[in-house]
Structures are given as structure tokens and as C-alpha cells.
Image (tube, rainbow, N blue to C red; front, top):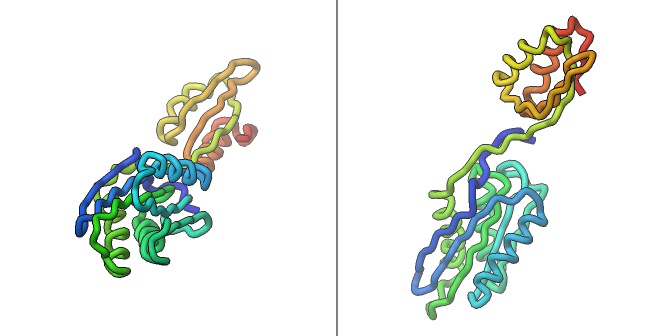
Length: 201
């Protein structure tokens, strides 16, 4: 699983009118299926008077298929949720859910028109979606001699490590949070500073 990938930075919404039907696409970051379901429920409640609230989500790294979901919410089968999910799956953005709300304007779009409208609404939202990088982190504990404290504090920024706590007893004990991929570098640093005596847990 990718340790780093872009995710939505905040809830984002775009709107367009297609053949008198109003389409609103709302996108949000979701870190679990229950997050996605809560988001879908909230948007559906916000637009409870809409003709349809169709949705799709991908929980996990971009393109992962372990935790996905979709719904046509009353539109003809395969015309809303599936094209929405296809766009999300190929967007390069992970942990993402989208709800496309439709207010029917009196003109039937046909199955091809619906596929284009729902998929296009998600594409339009993604085109202006602000993203941030998601980084898997881990909290680790280790101890070094008092003489090595300066070297540890100097090295932590190079490991993109956040110092959570430090205690001074017989040794100097640290708890740090850092990207998962930096663990081997921290272990190597502690081994070097303690001549192989220190451990990282």
C-alpha cells in the first residue's frame, strides 16, 4: 500500500446546469467506509429535496478496490454511480468520496447523457479540488545516553520526525512520530549513537 498519496484537503463543491438539470458535485476526504457513509448521508440530508443524490467512494490509495462503493440512487442502472467511481478510481487521489446531486429540469438526458453528466460532474470537481499529501506515520520510542541528546535533536528534522515527548532518567528517552518509511533511518541513527545497544520500539 502506498504510504504517501494526495487526498482532498477540504470539502469541495462545484455546480453546473446540463439541459436544464442542475448538477452539484460535492467531494470530501474519507478515511473509512463509515466516514464515507456519514458524508453521503449528510449531503443527501442537505439536498433532501433533490431528484437524486448519487454517490461513489474509494477508501485507500488511489485506484485501490478494497473499499469502494457506489449508488445510482434511482437513476437507470449504471448511469451514475459507475461512471462516478470510474473517474474517482483514475483520478490519482485517494480516500475520496463524491456525491452528485441532481435537480431534474424537465429534459430527459438519456443513458449516454446521464453517464456523461455524472462522470463529468466528478471530473469538473476534481479539476479544481485542493489536495494535501497523506503520509502514513508511526510513533516510536527509543533511548540514548545523555551525551547523544544533541545529535538526536539535530537529526529529527532530517527524518521529518515530530518530537512527542522526552524524559531524562538514567538515559534520555524519546517518543517521536515520523513517516513509516523513515523508520529504518531512525533505527540506523539510534544504533550508531548507542554503538548497537539502543533499540527502537
